[in-house]
Image (cartoon, rainbow, N blue to C red):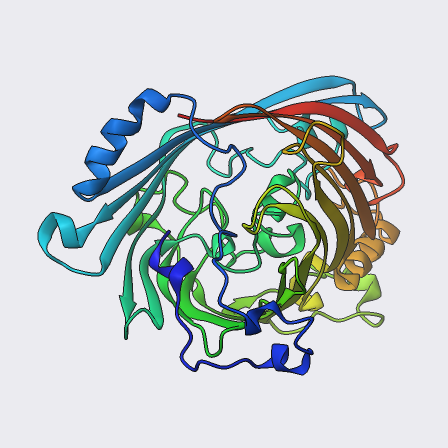
Length: 449
């Protein structure tokens, strides 16, 4: 468990949870271990024979995890064409305890390297170019060793303050959860957030730092300052000198983490805001001269993002940690419409453990999500269409909205290996009614060495 997961409260009291009665509020009995941000999907390692060596290294200050993730999706109906696309990810996650290694007590160095390869089924067969239906398709293309995160972590004031400094992926810190990353489309954060420049997403990382504090036992406050730039800048992760920076991202997130009743059912309720100081052009684009009396181009402006995310365990099964049970989850994201492709997104779903008899560790997930294109973009495309001008590559008409439905069934085969059949249904591919709704099926494989 990292220092961030052991974060102690500044004040030994409760905030919102104090409004609950004693039968509902399990925090009144004792603090409960988190276990929510651990990579719990694979439940162990494929090669347990390495454990003595792992323990020897860990005792001396070094720990690691090597993982493989594969996603194969086939478009079986609708979309553009029938066919399958494959993508995979190899990830080496390392942690150096600098106290044990060089005497810097309390300091940890984290580094993540990734290899991603394959093709994106959204582009190849569906005709969707704004929503990635396969999560591990890379921003960087085929890269043998992409440097993602590399940052220092330090616990201060008897672990009441946690800081991270370095190159950090924002969407693995803000607006994310283990539950979201059991899905393909919404991992590691909802599409309307992670597709915006400034909100870096794996394998993209940003220079900056985060501060975490737990004001009371049931609240966590996270904020920071990061460099903002295009998601495709520095595609290898190593060319820091050539990386383009356009402004500063200022995110802040407040999380309420109650535990309800005798079963100690955890909930995670987050409200967040991000201000990107980059000056973005009006998403309406160039207004044809014949229609400039109808619509005008706004001045460039910064982008604000607001989000609310919630998940609540509704039953407990198979243990006392935070992944041992079934959850309901929902969220809403809003971006400044004049400078954002997606103005809004709403999602809701469930992640349920052990719903079949004699399969206590299988997990079933289902999620519906609705995506709203900015009305400024729609208006610009409509005016260009009326003027007989091109709407751009892969745009079949004025784009308005789309929706996706995703379902999976995760099967732990052996410790360290999960096989996950996946079903996806995308409504209005390309955000118009031109391309037929697409039906996809496939498989996701998770393996940890």
